[in-house]
Figure 1 (cartoon, rainbow, N blue to C red):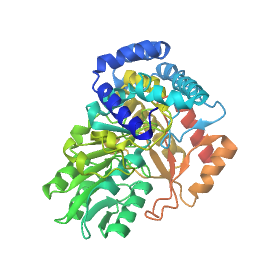
Figure 2: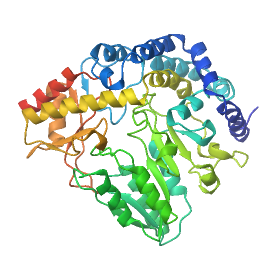
Figure 3: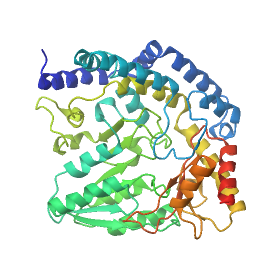
Figure 4: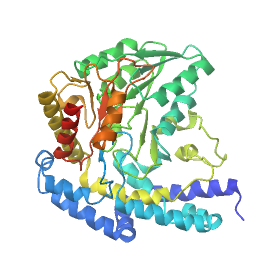
Amino acid sequence: MINRRQFAIRTAGTLGVLAISPAASFADQLDATFALSNRLAREIAEMADAASPELLAEDERFWARVRGAFSLNPDVINLDHGWTNPTTRAAVDELARGARQLEALPAEELGRLFFGDGGPGVRPALAEALGVPPTEIALVRNATEALNTVLLGLPLNAGDEIVCSAHDYFAMLDALEQRRARDGVVLRMIRPPIPAPSLEALAELYEAAIGPRTRLVLVTHVSNLTGQLFPVKRIAIAAHRVGAEVVVDGAQSVGVQGEPISALDCDYYGASAHKWLGTPVGLGALWMRPAHVRKIWPMVPPPPDVTGMRRFEWIGTAPAYLWPAALPALALHRSLGPARKAARLRYLSSHLRKRVTAALPDTRFYTPADSAMGIGITTIELPGVSSDDLQKRLRERHRILTQSMADSKRAPEIRGLRITPNVYTTPADLDRLVAALKAD
């Protein structure tokens, strides 16, 4: 019988061997395991290759074909993909199959999932999407777990400074405030203007806050509150100049921002795969420079024999059937590619901005119209209108799902309605939103 400690050690060893499989063997595994899903992915890839990303962005027949890969709720126009994307029909089918098989005899099936060939293929697939070697990532549950591993696990002393932003995700700021209370670190929090005048202006805010006592800089690649994109590389250069390290929240950029992590010049990177990569809920990734791995304390202590990035994966017994269920979704992402997805989202965002400006000219946009300043997320504020109340009315009266971004204790100036279409959202869906906004 395998005890919990042996289980963890064997799991880490098995995953370590499988993690170094080349991309070609990953594709072969997908073809063998998910033939139907891959056929669709290949068909979509062939269609996509016929046009540039910018031309394809306006091809509604193509995106209708992509939409066909999903089982979406037909009664709701979902414009809240910034929280969690739906996953593909093939992924849901595999998720259900895996759950049924596991729960029928979990004492044996857990061993099969961890020690067999059913799950670890997700590691090279996810690493490919991030543009890093498979050995440099840990599979975690979400961006919060990934980033908090670094924010809480990096050795720091009282008086050491961490630079962050009032527009960072609340869970990251919760972790930093706990770190301040526990260890006496100092938080230097910038407050970006809304909208920001330029990427240079944003970089200058961080550069002014970074000083000789700065040890860590947290940068959100794309703000979930405003949709603003931040100049990560320039901020990283300023941080490294004083010997500080940089952790990037990539939750809203991975899957639609084509740069590999290496191009960002950061030290740590965390993201959720169930946002723009479209996997089932419950999968995320943590990356860090190999030189940093040994100094970061895991949130859950692993057995002593577990080394490398596997140290950050140990959480005890977990639903490992999530891993193989992610493969069909990652195959679809691979066929589309971040450039095509980004072009589509920018096209939809531009369409929305034009329609809203024409119908409601007093609307305040939280990001400029310049496509270099954001991607996929549009947050608006209607004068004198509560975004909380507006969100409820849109859902109840018009069956349109959006997200209110009000009531942030750290950024009370944000009182907007966040609108996040997906690539399969249609301009007609956005026109219905604008008509509803005008009617209310």
